[in-house]
Length: 247
Image (cartoon, rainbow, N blue to C red):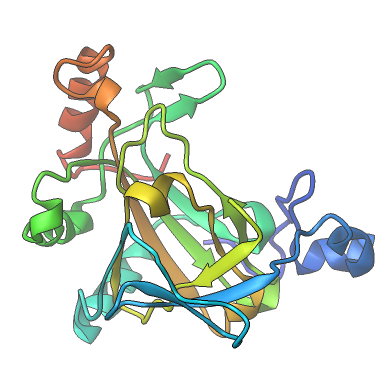
């Protein structure tokens, strides 16, 4: 594992972390940062986006499934110990990452399997538990990305939409809806929340070390009957062997 104090900055373009701000200046980097005009908070009970001020109205916010305490405290501790045994690589915006997935060139729409050895063994039981949920019974992930956020690095992830050429269904305006994510919870994004709304992690919400694992499934083009069915079958065979190491 790299020493956090000596790790180099991996930001590119408009990406930023605390090291960038020390070099380039915070004001320069904030000039291109979009400002959210209307602030809302997602209510998992009603599945509504509730305004933080009295000048706006609630609206339906479909495509979010949140289950608290998906894993226990003991499982959380063991997962973190296991994850930390693998090497963390510097990523943009003050994050560190571990990738378990194929190398993908989204611009050229090419997938390379050479270094992909599957999801990690520790994830087998997590995937089985996900599949016990009615909405995820057919969920077969082919990528896992572990991300680490630290307040002392100014870690965040900018608003973005995941690519939909390879990655499938489950995983934009100046309206911002905050979804509170308690530790050890399971969050599923699908439908409108997956394809119409950008998602992000704000720097100001990182108060302590935060480690999350994102699992992605294949798009329809890579499933049975799709244009890339053969490649999809290979990806699934490798992924669900659960013998993976970070690529």
